Length: 146
Image (cartoon, rainbow, N blue to C red; front, top):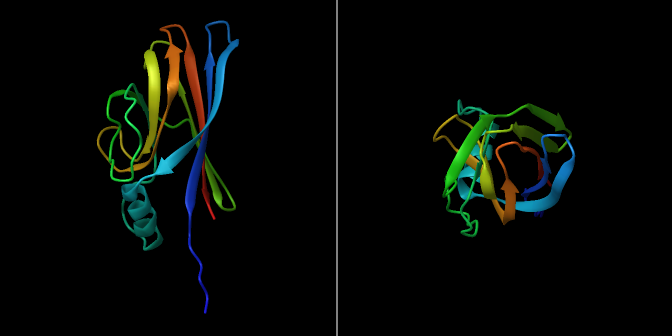
């Protein structure tokens, strides 16, 4: 008898840069693939017409990530992904929140498949990254199926 289980896990690399391009903060953070995200992956295997993950959002809630969540709790900015790369069993989503976009004490992030609403694949919460109006925030989010 075979006992195989598909697991999805994610890891973010977040870089905060000042207006001069100098790195001000760098973090590596694990995320939670939420129930809606797992259901989304299963539907895509079956050829669902659901849109692919296309956006990343950031927010200011410090409420812990739980599997039942479907959106960020306090979203302040959502932008279209800069790139998506698939290599073997990993997908890397990259986004950049430019100067003036999503400023404040950033404490949560999510991957979604729409410019508003949509399905959330994953959410994470972390200690505050203080993004001023002149800073940019780059996120590289790797989702691995194992």
